[in-house]
Length: 384
Ligand SMILES: NC(=O)c1ccc[n+]([C@@H]2O[C@H](COP(=O)([O-])OP(=O)(O)OC[C@H]3O[C@@H](n4cnc5c(N)ncnc54)[C@H](O)[C@@H]3O)[C@@H](O)[C@H]2O)c1
Image 1 (cartoon, rainbow, N blue to C red):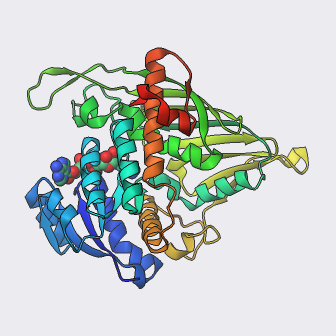
Image 2 (cartoon, protein in one colour):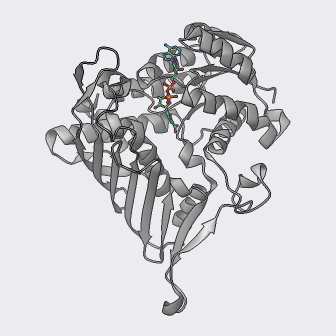
Image 3 (cartoon, rainbow, N blue to C red):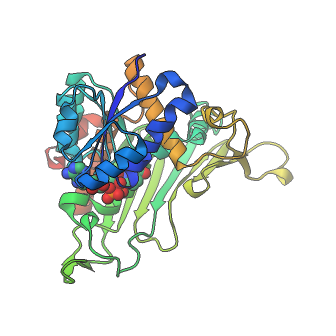
């Protein structure tokens, strides 16, 4: 396969993570996959130029529409604030480009559906920035469930909590605006875990949601005035999977002391697993067999026996990091473009997560359980 030309929009936290991944993927997985770093755009032209030079992009600019239209750009990476994803992704899709979009896909379910349907019509390949899913140990967790090694799954308990807004003195930012940050902790953190829950256990069929804002006002860093926070600090979901398994999920951006505390516990008739992102190279497994006096959780350390760990490192227990997950995410997209096969997680998964998030908001408003089987979601006019 001839190498693909990539255009990257945004030079912040995720822009740099995507750039590291684009530069590394050929080294890790083989030179044939090495992308061409064609075009880097940021609203701040100086940042774009400086980063393009440091990261090895051929050209830089401040016009994302020009990047989407550029004939040597085959894939558009979108690493800008949430409210810009829809417009940028749609322009890229309509220009026939493949898209790698950070989460959340959009701010509303209707925008997400429009993107999903446009990508399907254009027959472009897509990928979402649900990087935690790319952990080889998450694949092991899924296999344990799918192969029946945990028996009948009784219960799912998932969470994603951080404390980046726990301090009420943390200033107002775009993340506090519904028109830019979407549904607060649900959009920022919950989308990762909701997607992972469905990857592990299959589709959710019904849910009940509750949203709470604790710090209702924050100081504007420019004017110094107090501004009303428009979205929620905490989201809680009670759910039922199509398999019949019940579950709970909880997301918070004000969970004091937690830094990247995404995790889950899954309990089955033959065993249980526990995963926590802050210890991302460990999967804890309990198996209900052997003498009772010797039973207990044991820790599986990530190693070369868990593909594609060996592409990074031949030695077990040395561990992968968050940027390695981004490399795997980019590699999955490159393979998807070559094979024509979709990846989990692509724009369809990003859309479904957006629809589920809208259902959580609807449930919070109506205090009702919401049917979230795919057909019901697509037909529910209240969710758009
Ligand atoms: N996958 C993950 O684990 C993860 C982690 C953090 C953030 N994110 C997501 O990544 C996205 C970006 O977040 P971030 O933390 O990198 O933000 P950031 O503020 O660090 O960077 C955003 C960048 O976008 C640029 N930008 C803004 N408007 C633009 C425009 N009109 N044209 C071109 N560039 C523009 C800014 O100048 C900035 O460089 C968000 O959607 C966020 O939810 C994902």
